[in-house]
Image (cartoon, rainbow, N blue to C red; front, side):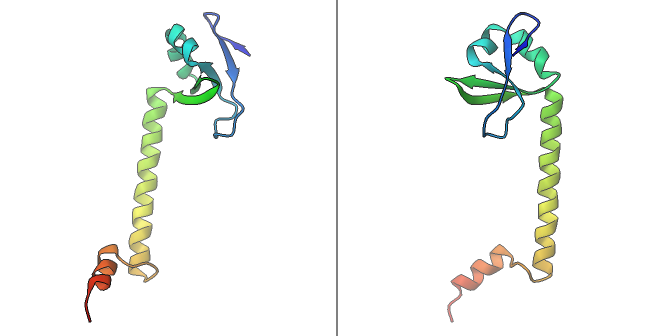
Amino acid sequence: MISGSIGCKLTKSNDSHGLNDMNKMTANQAKTHFGELLLQTQREPVQITKNGKPAAVVLSAEDYASNEELKLQLLQLRAVQAENDVASGLATDGDAFLSKLTQQD
């Protein structure tokens, strides 16, 4: 266990939700020690558990913005790849495909 600055006990997460090696708090601890939670998230994300199960992950605004930027970059990359696939014949435009399906011979 890792002791927080106000005495709240943080534990390391070890679960199958991709949240391994992350500090965690119970929902009650997060409510009671909210200020400490906010300080901790400036260093690293904190998993919140409820009834012993992962319920949420709290992270800093900076980490959130960084994650959103990475998601946007991935989406843009996938859009370019899809356009390239259509142009090279590896994929079909969805509208064109649906038009062919609905055409009557």
